[in-house]
Length: 326
Image (cartoon, rainbow, N blue to C red; front, side, top):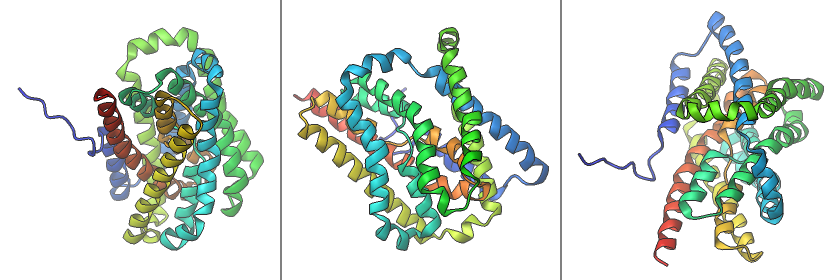
């Protein structure tokens, strides 16, 4: 029997589940005792996510990658410097299109670390430097736990009246950094069991994110998110995400080329510097923002995630075919 291959432009199963979770939260938002129970489960899910992030972080990849510091500096600079600058530079365009609250979500998106799994997978498909991609993505995840909350606390949260900076620091350490460190310290003992679990671990990881998304959007729906966000604003947000993604890709690939990096390293920079992590972004938002703002804060991230997967997958296949034809 002939197996029909999923087209590159078609969303993957996980993305469809994310969309389904938002629809479920819209139709059946968690309320009352269920919402209270969900808040405890969400806290546990976030701790589990970052425990898994820490346990899966390859320490040797970071050590080995220190010799390739110019490439990593370019990728991390794009992730944590160029993206936030773009977010602020595009403010005159963004505010009229999407309004103040969604613009807050775009700024938050710009301050997130890069994704790990898809960046490494796409780099491999396109024929890039996979060890450097692993190193860069791992370093981005680690730095993101520290840098993203600092950027958000300093540049975003003062505009929305969230909890005090001290409270945020304590919550970040207890819910994000502590589980991450514990997981990483236990990595020597967990590496073998995790390898045996294989796809089961991925299901737990992604299932935790879906739980956090459901909780965030349940609170947002009860807070009237769909009265605040019009279809016109959604279309504007899609256009903005496309602009951000294309500008970041053009910048990081063009600069890598200008700096004389090899083709393999340019590909690594392209997929490592122009992507944002949904796996880190959703739980960090849950910690940093008031419950009423989490849903609207992560909406740009979810759209960006969908677009980056579609465009990057097609681009990776193009680069792969281009390399084969040489």
